Amino acid sequence: MKLWGGRFEKDTDALVEDFHSSISFDQRLYKHDIRGSIAHAKMLGRIGILTAEEAAKIVEGLETLLTDIEEGRVQFEIGAEDIHMNIEKLLTERIGDLGKKLHTGRSRNDQVALDFRLFLREEIDRIKDLLVKLIETLMNLSAQHLRTWMPGYTHLQKAQPITLAHHFMAYVQMFLRDLGRLRDARQRLNISPLGSGALAGTTFPLQREEVAQELGFAGVTLNSLDGVSDRDFALEFLSAAAILMMHLSRLCEELIIWSSGEFSFIIIDDAYATGSSIMPQKKNPDVAELVRGKTGRVYGDLITLLTVMKGLPLAYNKDMQEDKECVFDAVDTVQKCLLVMEPMLATLKVNTKIMAEEARKGFTNATDLADYLVKKNVPFREAHAIVGRLVLECTKRGCALEDIPLAELQEISPVFAADLYQEISLENCVEKRNITGGPAPEAVEEAIRVSQKVLKSYLW
Image (cartoon, rainbow, N blue to C red; front, side, top):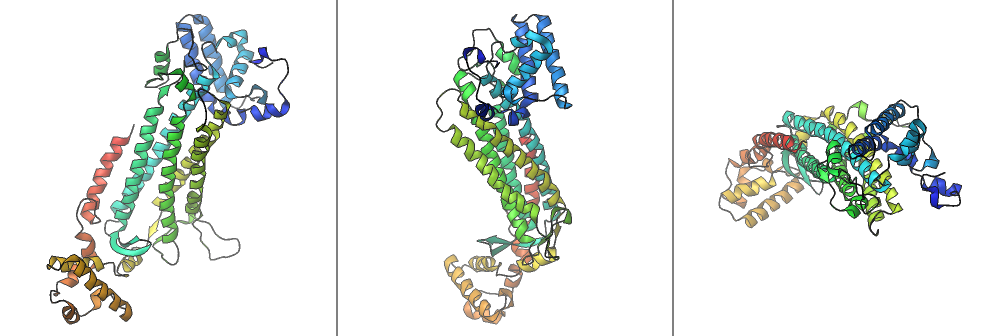
């Protein structure tokens, strides 16, 4: 008989039994369910709902059950529906009718809300550790490549010269913001809903604050309806996860492009590439491609839960059983991607010579030539037009701006002088951009120092 079956005259249809059950996926919450149940049982003992001996026996039974589950000695039942009912059923089988007292003052509605928050808090902490390692690797790479010149792009067309350090540090800023979003999401989810009951709390004098403190929460929910029906915390995590995956995907896209024969900027380590079953010469950036592809999964997870929640009246509805699989999938996907991204980046080989050669092409110093004219008191729009005509002429000749003889330049504008060649050299174009946030080696070094401080301030 179902633990809730007193009001029913018929057994649940077998098809509904399978359709209704969530144990196939929510068994993942067993540790959190037992942890919450232990705290609840201790509290019931403190307020006299259970005797001290009863509370101790329940706690001992739950602790033993946890050990048996983790050692693979427990088989969950579909007929018991979910992890909460499975745990209660298993406990009652072990300690007798005393196990039936555990649910006093509690509903599965506030129980699952508690378990879900405990789970997500733990997984965010794991993601944080992985993301910190990735950020540190990118900062280390940046420190190694302060003077690795490369072309910067807009519209995937060569634009201005920068350094690889500056490029990697752009991703550091993105990932630091991701870390901040995860920290903020964790802070908001770290509130205990236990004691909300099914929707209207309970008449028992529960010590909600004490239980919350024991479970590491910063406080308790202040509205029982909200306590059981809120999934904002999961949506906020999924949103942060989707943005994080977007940043990972953008970085992977560039690694894929840079490792192609057309670019040859980098070589991905063999451990993070695969071959072709038919083409012997192939070395494919499959790891980066998979991270890029898995980003769509996490987007889908976010849209799934947003769609589930968008029309639900207060308080709990069975639709909300669909909240877990999408969150579980996002957690697993993000963690797997971060796990593989960090060593892939750490083992990259950089073709610094090719990067520098490409930075000298495509008229990446054209803006600096225009700036040179401006410094000679030529209005910027006039300078822009002059350099544009020079670029067109160089395109026809198949040469670079620095290849045009000074005499020819002076025919176009008498302000040109011999110092222009130094002004538009690749190294000077980068090194003179020494403002905060710029690509000059000194500016990037300062960005690394500041980012290291920011990283420490974001940790919890």
